[in-house]
Length: 153
Ligand SMILES: [Zn+2]
Image (cartoon, rainbow, N blue to C red):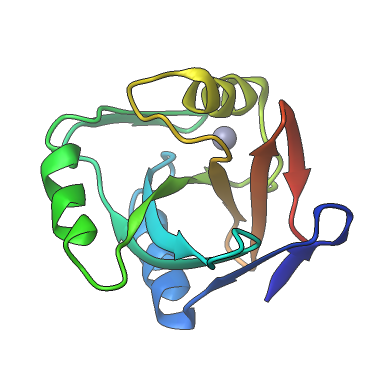
C-alpha cells in the first residue's frame, strides 16, 4: 500500500500486475516502454486500486524517450467500463532503463497535458515510473493533484 499523507490518498496495485508490468517493460531494454493504467477509486475518491494495464498498439521507444499513441485504446477501455465495478483509465506507466524512477521534464509535461487535455480527460492522473538496471528495480508512483505532482510513499 502506498500513500500521500499530505493529501490523505492511498494506492494499491496487485503484485501480479506489478510484476507483469515489470516483465513487459524489461523486455524492451534498452528502450523505454510503457502502457495505460486501469482501475478504480473508492467511493470517497481517496483510495485508488490499479487492476489492469493496456499496452499501446503504436509507440516509439528509445533509451530516453517513450511516446505512445492512443489509437485503438478507447475500444479496449470500453470493455473495462462494462465491468462491475466499472474500471477506468487512471494514468500511465513507463520504464526508465538504467535510471531512477524520477520524472523527467518530458514526463512532467506529459502528465500536465493529460490533466489538462480533453482527449483523455482525467483530473488526477497517475504516473508509475519503473527505474531499473541489471541488479534492481525501483518504482515511483505519482499523482498530479491541483497542478502539482506528488509522490506516493
Ligand atoms: Zn520518463
